[in-house]
Length: 293
Image (tube, rainbow, N blue to C red; front, top):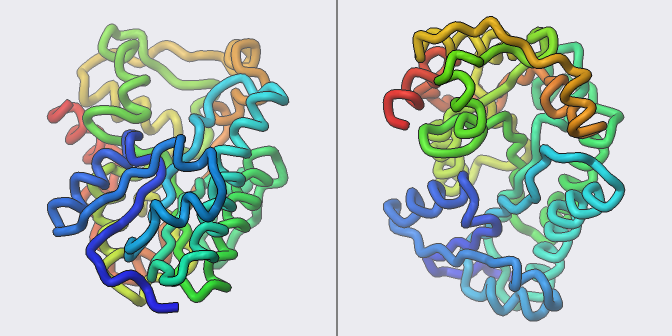
């Protein structure tokens, strides 16, 4: 089927931190954005297909926040907001008489195991809950490729920006001088500045050669201790404190692994494509975020 001809991109998760900034950037680039709401995913694939009508592309950003106590009920919510929602999007595009040209779906670096450096071409997949969640999430997205759509999956690191996201939650104790590492601080921390993330999305929309899986992470991953040092230096505050992993496990249970574990991930395909990072190091990213926050 031929793709819609209009300058229209539909986005799930458009009201989130990344979605709001991406929507504004697409508008500035001349695109019209259709923001898909939760209500759009309560009906059938046919009903959703009507909302996607005339869309040139679909960007899937939806997903319930991963940090929380992973009770069986919450795990079900996490899965449905990722796997189930992505499945419905692909089913909707399958019944469209004119399908979009592009499906760009989200995943996360939780796809990868701890303990080694990963690229898109050389990696070990994690065998824990997050690994299985991201594998199945991506599996639904890849079904769009069989429909003839240019299909991309972005595996996101932690997104750092001046007005929301992870830093908004981290900064209050650091500003008061109570900042510090989580656990040993040795766990890998793969991240990306919001501006670089948005630039990658715009590049993927514009360049038909972009296809497949990409790591959306800065080229210089750090550790939790490295992030802590960067925040302390930028704020001129001490970072003597440490939050023991056992305390986090008491609060979040299995979900504490989001904070106490990490993956070292390199964006090999972005670099190979010639993508230029504005903020390649954690010190540069943190300074910019704090200067504009």
